[in-house]
Image 1 (cartoon, helix red, strand yellow):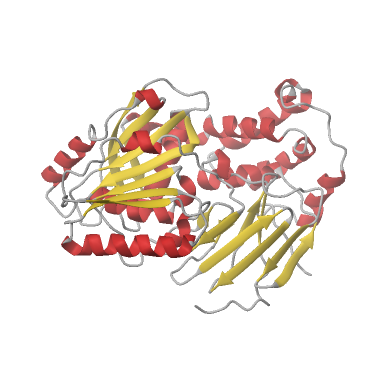
Image 2 (cartoon, rainbow, N blue to C red):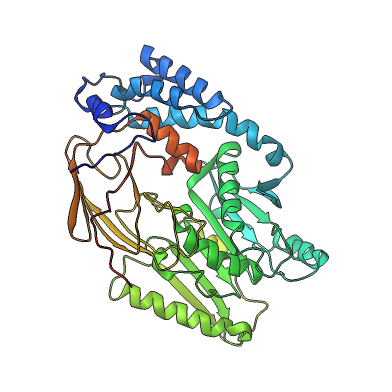
Length: 433
Protein backbone atom coordinates (compact mmCIF):
# COMPACT_ATOMS: atom_id res chain seq x y z
CA UNK A 1 0.00 0.00 0.00
CA UNK A 2 3.02 2.25 -0.03
CA UNK A 3 2.52 3.12 3.64
CA UNK A 4 5.49 3.73 5.93
CA UNK A 5 5.78 4.51 9.60
CA UNK A 6 8.90 6.58 10.19
CA UNK A 7 10.81 6.16 13.45
CA UNK A 8 11.26 9.87 13.94
CA UNK A 9 12.98 10.54 10.62
CA UNK A 10 15.60 7.87 11.20
CA UNK A 11 15.65 4.47 9.48
CA UNK A 12 13.06 3.21 7.05
CA UNK A 13 10.36 1.08 8.58
CA UNK A 14 11.50 -2.05 6.80
CA UNK A 15 14.79 -1.90 8.69
CA UNK A 16 13.19 -1.18 12.05
CA UNK A 17 10.73 -4.06 11.61
CA UNK A 18 13.54 -6.60 11.97
CA UNK A 19 13.47 -6.06 15.73
CA UNK A 20 10.04 -7.72 15.84
CA UNK A 21 11.59 -10.99 14.77
CA UNK A 22 14.75 -10.87 16.88
CA UNK A 23 15.00 -13.06 20.00
CA UNK A 24 13.98 -11.15 23.12
CA UNK A 25 16.35 -11.15 26.05
CA UNK A 26 14.79 -12.73 29.17
CA UNK A 27 15.60 -9.73 31.35
CA UNK A 28 13.06 -8.65 33.96
CA UNK A 29 12.17 -5.03 34.60
CA UNK A 30 13.79 -5.27 37.99
CA UNK A 31 17.16 -6.55 36.76
CA UNK A 32 17.44 -4.64 33.48
CA UNK A 33 19.51 -1.69 34.81
CA UNK A 34 22.00 -4.14 36.36
CA UNK A 35 22.31 -6.33 33.26
CA UNK A 36 25.17 -5.78 30.79
CA UNK A 37 22.79 -4.53 28.09
CA UNK A 38 20.93 -2.44 30.65
CA UNK A 39 24.16 -0.69 31.62
CA UNK A 40 25.04 -0.16 27.98
CA UNK A 41 21.59 1.33 27.35
CA UNK A 42 21.98 3.65 30.35
CA UNK A 43 25.30 4.86 29.00
CA UNK A 44 23.95 5.38 25.48
CA UNK A 45 20.90 7.27 26.79
CA UNK A 46 23.08 9.49 28.96
CA UNK A 47 25.32 10.32 26.02
CA UNK A 48 22.35 11.18 23.82
CA UNK A 49 20.54 13.41 26.29
CA UNK A 50 23.78 15.16 27.30
CA UNK A 51 24.33 16.43 23.76
CA UNK A 52 23.66 20.14 23.12
CA UNK A 53 20.84 19.06 20.80
CA UNK A 54 19.25 15.82 19.69
CA UNK A 55 21.37 13.86 17.21
CA UNK A 56 20.05 11.45 14.60
CA UNK A 57 23.27 9.47 14.90
CA UNK A 58 22.91 8.83 18.63
CA UNK A 59 19.22 8.05 18.17
CA UNK A 60 20.09 5.46 15.52
CA UNK A 61 22.61 4.01 17.95
CA UNK A 62 19.84 3.48 20.53
CA UNK A 63 17.95 1.17 18.18
CA UNK A 64 20.47 -1.60 18.83
CA UNK A 65 18.68 -2.02 22.17
CA UNK A 66 15.22 -2.47 20.64
CA UNK A 67 15.21 -6.17 21.50
CA UNK A 68 15.01 -5.21 25.18
CA UNK A 69 11.70 -3.45 24.73
CA UNK A 70 9.02 -6.16 24.62
CA UNK A 71 9.96 -7.74 27.96
CA UNK A 72 11.02 -4.57 29.75
CA UNK A 73 8.75 -1.71 28.71
CA UNK A 74 8.48 -0.07 32.12
CA UNK A 75 12.17 -0.46 32.96
CA UNK A 76 13.24 1.02 29.62
CA UNK A 77 10.78 3.90 30.01
CA UNK A 78 12.21 4.58 33.47
CA UNK A 79 15.78 4.62 32.14
CA UNK A 80 14.82 6.96 29.29
CA UNK A 81 12.99 9.38 31.61
CA UNK A 82 15.87 9.41 34.11
CA UNK A 83 18.43 10.14 31.40
CA UNK A 84 16.24 12.83 29.86
CA UNK A 85 15.65 14.57 33.18
CA UNK A 86 19.34 14.62 34.06
CA UNK A 87 20.52 15.73 30.63
CA UNK A 88 20.57 18.94 28.64
CA UNK A 89 16.96 19.78 29.48
CA UNK A 90 17.94 20.23 33.13
CA UNK A 91 20.67 22.68 32.16
CA UNK A 92 18.32 24.51 29.80
CA UNK A 93 15.58 24.99 32.42
CA UNK A 94 17.67 25.28 35.59
CA UNK A 95 18.13 29.05 35.63
CA UNK A 96 14.43 29.75 35.08
CA UNK A 97 13.34 27.20 37.66
CA UNK A 98 15.65 28.61 40.30
CA UNK A 99 14.27 32.08 39.50
CA UNK A 100 10.65 30.86 39.84
CA UNK A 101 9.67 31.78 36.30
CA UNK A 102 8.72 30.14 33.05
CA UNK A 103 9.89 31.57 29.73
CA UNK A 104 8.50 30.92 26.27
CA UNK A 105 9.98 33.05 23.53
CA UNK A 106 9.80 36.69 24.65
CA UNK A 107 7.10 35.98 27.25
CA UNK A 108 7.94 35.51 30.91
CA UNK A 109 5.62 34.41 33.71
CA UNK A 110 6.86 34.45 37.30
CA UNK A 111 5.24 32.09 39.76
CA UNK A 112 5.13 31.28 43.46
CA UNK A 113 4.68 27.72 44.59
CA UNK A 114 4.58 25.81 47.83
CA UNK A 115 4.30 22.23 49.03
CA UNK A 116 1.14 21.17 50.83
CA UNK A 117 1.29 17.95 52.84
CA UNK A 118 3.51 14.98 52.03
CA UNK A 119 4.54 13.83 48.60
CA UNK A 120 2.48 10.84 47.40
CA UNK A 121 4.25 7.68 46.23
CA UNK A 122 3.68 8.49 42.55
CA UNK A 123 4.95 12.06 42.85
CA UNK A 124 3.45 15.47 43.56
CA UNK A 125 0.14 16.51 42.01
CA UNK A 126 0.52 20.03 40.60
CA UNK A 127 -2.23 22.66 40.84
CA UNK A 128 -1.68 25.67 38.56
CA UNK A 129 -3.80 28.63 39.72
CA UNK A 130 -4.34 31.73 37.59
CA UNK A 131 -5.31 35.14 38.94
CA UNK A 132 -7.98 37.70 38.08
CA UNK A 133 -7.40 41.12 36.54
CA UNK A 134 -6.26 41.45 32.95
CA UNK A 135 -6.56 44.60 30.86
CA UNK A 136 -5.36 46.54 33.89
CA UNK A 137 -2.25 48.32 35.20
CA UNK A 138 0.63 46.11 36.26
CA UNK A 139 0.12 47.01 39.92
CA UNK A 140 -3.46 45.72 39.88
CA UNK A 141 -2.52 42.47 38.16
CA UNK A 142 0.36 42.01 40.61
CA UNK A 143 -2.09 42.50 43.46
CA UNK A 144 -4.46 39.93 41.97
CA UNK A 145 -1.57 37.51 41.57
CA UNK A 146 -0.74 37.97 45.26
CA UNK A 147 -4.36 37.17 46.16
CA UNK A 148 -4.20 33.98 44.09
CA UNK A 149 -1.13 32.84 46.01
CA UNK A 150 -3.44 32.10 48.95
CA UNK A 151 -6.86 32.04 47.30
CA UNK A 152 -7.58 28.31 47.16
CA UNK A 153 -7.57 26.76 50.63
CA UNK A 154 -5.06 24.06 51.53
CA UNK A 155 -6.39 20.52 51.71
CA UNK A 156 -3.49 18.41 52.92
CA UNK A 157 -6.00 15.88 54.25
CA UNK A 158 -6.75 14.88 50.64
CA UNK A 159 -3.06 14.15 50.01
CA UNK A 160 0.08 16.14 49.27
CA UNK A 161 0.43 18.47 46.28
CA UNK A 162 2.19 21.53 44.89
CA UNK A 163 0.21 24.76 44.70
CA UNK A 164 1.51 27.16 42.04
CA UNK A 165 0.17 30.68 41.52
CA UNK A 166 1.10 31.79 38.01
CA UNK A 167 1.47 35.45 37.02
CA UNK A 168 0.09 36.26 33.56
CA UNK A 169 2.91 37.01 31.10
CA UNK A 170 1.31 40.33 30.12
CA UNK A 171 -1.24 42.82 31.47
CA UNK A 172 -3.43 42.51 28.39
CA UNK A 173 -7.10 41.56 28.50
CA UNK A 174 -6.31 38.07 27.20
CA UNK A 175 -3.04 37.49 29.02
CA UNK A 176 -4.07 33.94 29.97
CA UNK A 177 -5.84 32.95 26.76
CA UNK A 178 -3.99 33.81 23.61
CA UNK A 179 -1.47 32.07 21.34
CA UNK A 180 1.65 32.67 23.43
CA UNK A 181 0.09 31.15 26.57
CA UNK A 182 -0.20 27.53 25.44
CA UNK A 183 3.52 26.91 24.79
CA UNK A 184 4.23 28.67 28.08
CA UNK A 185 1.92 26.32 30.01
CA UNK A 186 3.49 23.31 28.28
CA UNK A 187 6.95 24.60 29.25
CA UNK A 188 5.82 25.09 32.86
CA UNK A 189 4.58 21.50 33.09
CA UNK A 190 7.82 20.20 31.56
CA UNK A 191 9.83 22.25 34.05
CA UNK A 192 8.01 20.83 37.06
CA UNK A 193 8.13 17.27 35.78
CA UNK A 194 11.91 17.56 35.49
CA UNK A 195 12.70 19.40 38.74
CA UNK A 196 9.94 18.71 41.25
CA UNK A 197 9.01 15.04 40.88
CA UNK A 198 5.49 15.87 39.70
CA UNK A 199 3.10 13.06 38.78
CA UNK A 200 2.47 13.66 35.06
CA UNK A 201 -1.06 12.25 35.37
CA UNK A 202 -2.06 14.62 38.16
CA UNK A 203 -1.58 18.12 36.75
CA UNK A 204 -4.49 20.54 37.28
CA UNK A 205 -5.26 24.04 36.05
CA UNK A 206 -7.76 26.50 37.54
CA UNK A 207 -8.52 30.18 37.78
CA UNK A 208 -10.92 32.99 38.69
CA UNK A 209 -12.21 35.72 36.35
CA UNK A 210 -9.24 36.53 34.07
CA UNK A 211 -7.65 33.27 35.16
CA UNK A 212 -10.98 31.51 34.68
CA UNK A 213 -11.03 32.61 31.06
CA UNK A 214 -7.56 31.11 30.85
CA UNK A 215 -8.84 27.80 32.22
CA UNK A 216 -11.69 27.88 29.69
CA UNK A 217 -9.15 28.22 26.84
CA UNK A 218 -6.15 26.25 28.10
CA UNK A 219 -8.27 23.39 29.40
CA UNK A 220 -10.09 22.33 26.22
CA UNK A 221 -7.11 23.11 23.94
CA UNK A 222 -4.72 21.06 26.09
CA UNK A 223 -7.15 18.65 27.73
CA UNK A 224 -4.68 15.80 27.24
CA UNK A 225 -2.29 17.43 29.72
CA UNK A 226 -4.62 17.68 32.72
CA UNK A 227 -6.32 15.47 35.27
CA UNK A 228 -8.99 18.12 35.86
CA UNK A 229 -9.73 21.78 35.06
CA UNK A 230 -11.82 24.39 36.85
CA UNK A 231 -12.98 27.88 35.88
CA UNK A 232 -14.81 30.43 38.04
CA UNK A 233 -16.51 33.70 37.05
CA UNK A 234 -15.56 33.35 33.39
CA UNK A 235 -16.80 31.81 30.16
CA UNK A 236 -15.73 30.38 26.84
CA UNK A 237 -14.61 32.84 24.18
CA UNK A 238 -15.63 32.64 20.55
CA UNK A 239 -13.80 29.88 18.74
CA UNK A 240 -11.28 29.29 21.56
CA UNK A 241 -12.95 26.63 23.71
CA UNK A 242 -14.24 23.52 21.96
CA UNK A 243 -16.35 21.39 24.30
CA UNK A 244 -15.69 18.41 22.02
CA UNK A 245 -12.13 18.07 23.35
CA UNK A 246 -13.33 17.34 26.90
CA UNK A 247 -14.59 13.81 26.20
CA UNK A 248 -12.09 12.25 28.62
CA UNK A 249 -11.20 15.14 30.96
CA UNK A 250 -12.93 16.46 34.08
CA UNK A 251 -13.93 20.10 33.62
CA UNK A 252 -16.02 22.16 36.03
CA UNK A 253 -17.07 25.79 35.87
CA UNK A 254 -18.87 28.04 38.33
CA UNK A 255 -20.86 31.14 37.43
CA UNK A 256 -23.12 33.49 39.39
CA UNK A 257 -26.67 33.91 38.11
CA UNK A 258 -26.16 37.69 38.05
CA UNK A 259 -22.77 37.57 36.30
CA UNK A 260 -24.10 38.76 32.96
CA UNK A 261 -21.37 41.22 31.89
CA UNK A 262 -19.66 40.39 28.59
CA UNK A 263 -22.23 37.64 28.08
CA UNK A 264 -20.60 35.43 30.72
CA UNK A 265 -23.74 33.73 32.00
CA UNK A 266 -25.19 33.31 28.52
CA UNK A 267 -21.94 31.77 27.25
CA UNK A 268 -21.72 29.38 30.21
CA UNK A 269 -25.28 28.19 29.65
CA UNK A 270 -24.53 27.64 25.96
CA UNK A 271 -21.36 25.69 26.80
CA UNK A 272 -23.28 23.52 29.26
CA UNK A 273 -25.94 22.84 26.62
CA UNK A 274 -23.30 21.84 24.09
CA UNK A 275 -21.75 19.40 26.58
CA UNK A 276 -25.10 17.81 27.33
CA UNK A 277 -25.75 17.32 23.62
CA UNK A 278 -22.34 15.70 23.18
CA UNK A 279 -22.85 13.45 26.19
CA UNK A 280 -26.36 12.35 25.27
CA UNK A 281 -27.59 9.55 27.53
CA UNK A 282 -24.11 8.34 28.41
CA UNK A 283 -22.51 8.87 31.80
CA UNK A 284 -19.01 7.67 30.98
CA UNK A 285 -18.00 10.53 28.68
CA UNK A 286 -17.71 14.31 28.97
CA UNK A 287 -17.24 14.59 32.77
CA UNK A 288 -18.13 18.30 32.64
CA UNK A 289 -20.40 20.17 35.04
CA UNK A 290 -21.62 23.73 35.44
CA UNK A 291 -22.33 25.12 38.90
CA UNK A 292 -24.85 27.98 38.67
CA UNK A 293 -24.83 29.93 41.93
CA UNK A 294 -28.04 31.67 42.87
CA UNK A 295 -27.74 35.21 44.19
CA UNK A 296 -24.10 35.64 43.15
CA UNK A 297 -22.61 38.10 40.69
CA UNK A 298 -19.03 38.19 39.48
CA UNK A 299 -17.25 38.19 42.84
CA UNK A 300 -17.25 36.05 45.94
CA UNK A 301 -18.15 32.69 44.42
CA UNK A 302 -17.92 29.78 46.90
CA UNK A 303 -15.08 28.01 45.13
CA UNK A 304 -12.15 28.29 47.51
CA UNK A 305 -12.25 24.57 48.39
CA UNK A 306 -12.12 23.49 44.76
CA UNK A 307 -8.84 21.62 45.22
CA UNK A 308 -10.54 19.13 47.52
CA UNK A 309 -13.09 18.34 44.80
CA UNK A 310 -10.50 18.05 42.02
CA UNK A 311 -7.80 16.12 43.85
CA UNK A 312 -8.90 12.55 43.14
CA UNK A 313 -8.99 13.02 39.34
CA UNK A 314 -6.31 11.18 37.35
CA UNK A 315 -5.47 11.77 33.70
CA UNK A 316 -5.68 8.92 31.20
CA UNK A 317 -2.83 9.83 28.82
CA UNK A 318 -3.87 7.27 26.18
CA UNK A 319 -7.68 7.10 26.07
CA UNK A 320 -8.94 4.60 23.52
CA UNK A 321 -11.36 7.14 22.04
CA UNK A 322 -10.46 10.73 21.17
CA UNK A 323 -12.32 13.71 19.78
CA UNK A 324 -10.08 16.64 18.88
CA UNK A 325 -11.14 19.93 17.36
CA UNK A 326 -8.18 22.28 16.98
CA UNK A 327 -9.07 25.92 17.58
CA UNK A 328 -5.79 27.62 16.65
CA UNK A 329 -2.53 27.10 14.76
CA UNK A 330 -0.43 26.64 17.91
CA UNK A 331 -1.45 23.39 19.63
CA UNK A 332 -0.34 20.61 17.27
CA UNK A 333 -0.57 17.51 19.46
CA UNK A 334 -3.40 15.88 21.38
CA UNK A 335 -2.73 12.58 23.23
CA UNK A 336 -1.70 10.09 20.49
CA UNK A 337 -2.45 12.40 17.57
CA UNK A 338 -0.59 15.20 15.79
CA UNK A 339 -1.79 17.58 13.09
CA UNK A 340 1.32 19.26 11.62
CA UNK A 341 -0.73 22.27 10.48
CA UNK A 342 -3.69 22.65 12.84
CA UNK A 343 -6.46 25.13 12.04
CA UNK A 344 -10.03 25.91 12.91
CA UNK A 345 -12.79 23.82 11.33
CA UNK A 346 -10.69 20.67 11.52
CA UNK A 347 -11.96 17.64 13.43
CA UNK A 348 -10.50 14.25 14.34
CA UNK A 349 -12.63 11.44 15.76
CA UNK A 350 -10.49 8.40 16.58
CA UNK A 351 -10.96 5.12 18.40
CA UNK A 352 -8.64 2.20 19.09
CA UNK A 353 -10.15 -1.23 19.69
CA UNK A 354 -7.51 -3.92 19.98
CA UNK A 355 -5.30 -3.44 16.95
CA UNK A 356 -8.01 -1.72 14.89
CA UNK A 357 -7.99 2.07 14.74
CA UNK A 358 -10.97 3.84 13.20
CA UNK A 359 -10.66 7.50 12.30
CA UNK A 360 -13.01 10.10 10.86
CA UNK A 361 -11.25 13.23 9.64
CA UNK A 362 -12.77 16.53 8.62
CA UNK A 363 -10.62 19.10 6.78
CA UNK A 364 -7.44 17.30 7.89
CA UNK A 365 -4.87 16.83 5.15
CA UNK A 366 -1.99 15.47 7.25
CA UNK A 367 -2.03 13.50 10.49
CA UNK A 368 0.67 11.74 12.50
CA UNK A 369 -0.23 8.80 14.69
CA UNK A 370 1.61 7.88 17.90
CA UNK A 371 1.40 4.30 19.19
CA UNK A 372 2.85 2.04 21.86
CA UNK A 373 2.04 -1.10 23.82
CA UNK A 374 -0.61 0.73 25.84
CA UNK A 375 -2.71 1.01 22.68
CA UNK A 376 -1.79 -1.91 20.41
CA UNK A 377 -0.12 -5.33 20.41
CA UNK A 378 2.94 -5.05 18.18
CA UNK A 379 3.03 -8.83 17.71
CA UNK A 380 -0.01 -8.50 15.45
CA UNK A 381 -0.74 -6.29 12.44
CA UNK A 382 -2.11 -2.82 13.16
CA UNK A 383 -5.10 -1.87 11.01
CA UNK A 384 -6.02 1.79 10.49
CA UNK A 385 -9.17 2.90 8.67
CA UNK A 386 -9.73 6.54 7.76
CA UNK A 387 -13.15 7.73 6.62
CA UNK A 388 -14.08 4.14 5.89
CA UNK A 389 -10.93 3.32 3.87
CA UNK A 390 -8.20 0.99 5.13
CA UNK A 391 -4.86 2.81 4.90
CA UNK A 392 -2.66 0.61 7.11
CA UNK A 393 -2.57 -3.15 7.70
CA UNK A 394 0.87 -4.34 8.76
CA UNK A 395 3.23 -5.18 11.58
CA UNK A 396 4.80 -2.16 13.24
CA UNK A 397 7.99 -2.14 15.27
CA UNK A 398 8.57 -0.14 18.46
CA UNK A 399 11.90 1.65 18.74
CA UNK A 400 13.72 3.25 21.62
CA UNK A 401 14.85 6.07 19.33
CA UNK A 402 11.20 7.02 18.74
CA UNK A 403 10.49 6.83 22.46
CA UNK A 404 13.31 9.31 23.07
CA UNK A 405 12.31 11.60 20.21
CA UNK A 406 8.67 11.81 21.27
CA UNK A 407 9.70 12.38 24.88
CA UNK A 408 11.76 15.34 23.73
CA UNK A 409 8.76 16.70 21.84
CA UNK A 410 6.55 17.11 24.90
CA UNK A 411 8.70 16.45 27.97
CA UNK A 412 5.99 14.20 29.40
CA UNK A 413 6.93 10.56 30.13
CA UNK A 414 3.31 9.47 29.69
CA UNK A 415 3.10 11.08 26.23
CA UNK A 416 6.22 9.40 24.86
CA UNK A 417 5.55 6.67 22.29
CA UNK A 418 7.60 3.98 20.55
CA UNK A 419 6.07 4.36 17.07
CA UNK A 420 5.24 7.56 15.23
CA UNK A 421 4.27 7.93 11.62
CA UNK A 422 2.21 9.87 9.09
CA UNK A 423 -1.03 8.46 7.74
CA UNK A 424 -1.27 8.27 3.92
CA UNK A 425 -4.24 10.54 3.39
CA UNK A 426 -3.68 11.58 -0.21
CA UNK A 427 -6.36 9.24 -1.56
CA UNK A 428 -8.80 9.79 1.30
CA UNK A 429 -11.72 12.12 0.88
CA UNK A 430 -12.07 14.36 3.94
CA UNK A 431 -15.66 15.46 4.45
CA UNK A 432 -16.44 19.13 4.78
CA UNK A 433 -18.27 20.41 7.86
